[in-house]
Length: 393
Ligand SMILES: Cc1ncc(COP(=O)(O)O)c(C=O)c1O
Image: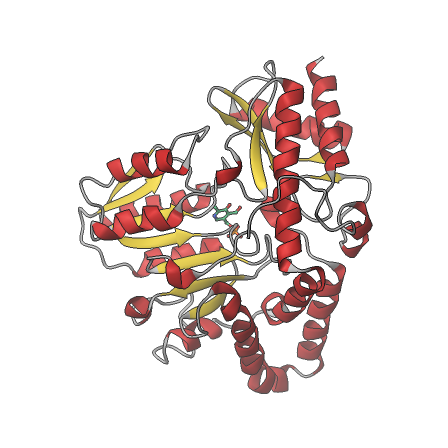
């Protein structure tokens, strides 16, 4: 679907009118959907029904309702990812999925594992831990930022594939820099050199029109609690057929050796309501229209980034080609350049102006990461601009 250049052809019901559908505190400006998502009230009500069902009759629920509930949730999700139910497991989050994959990898000591300088911190730590434990050689490639084009990213990445790594961990959408990476081309380049490919697509479900069958990878994990409106604790791990027999959940439990799908389905007694209520999140999306949500969020992110960069005389972290529903904008000079200064500014925006937005130190200065979700509108970013200007002055 072509991306709209402006908000004018988007749904008039988004922005302030839809805010009541979420529990978000009214007197805050929420510009950080990317980190933790936000769950609609209707989805939280559906989650509560699942929790009530469990507590009403725990034994019956666990013996009779749990498995069909999980299977129905997976079956509802699969077509939205372009795959079948087999090999698609629900997990708590992307961090657990990455850890599960890395824990089972049987690579000889001395194998090269390639990440990037924009790999998510928790994933980087998991790779560091398993590399130290197994004697793997962890390498990192620096990706261009600000990023001019997909071609520039592919060129930088391809150059780092020599010597060939045994495993690459690739982001679909980067966390510290909010770039939608040219994943298919990067994964193809890694595969061509014989590498296993693990994709961290934490931000992609909902934001991008995913077709996992077209991405050459061994594992793909994504979160549904970010851009697909589920409660926290709902993500997935899709595993290519060739890897399923040797990929296991972090917690080995009762259904061990009963196949990939069964093993991931039951990982011990827990509250799985955030996964069981997945259909209600899909219903919320369908009620508003997945295409309409994507079009609005993408247009809003681009328009807000252009407006702020123009107002501050700065720049955005990437053009429309590499932008989804999040985008970096460089702050005016004078706020410093360190992680501590970034956190201090973030705290002042929260405490003094009630604005939630991540601030990252990059390129020797500070950048903010804007998120755009259907409850946002241009006035939210104008409030941010005003607050930054007051603090700068
Ligand atoms: C790229 C990326 N990977 C992984 C994660 C981890 O997500 P979770 O904490 O839900 O596991 C995040 C969270 O922001 C992320 O941005």
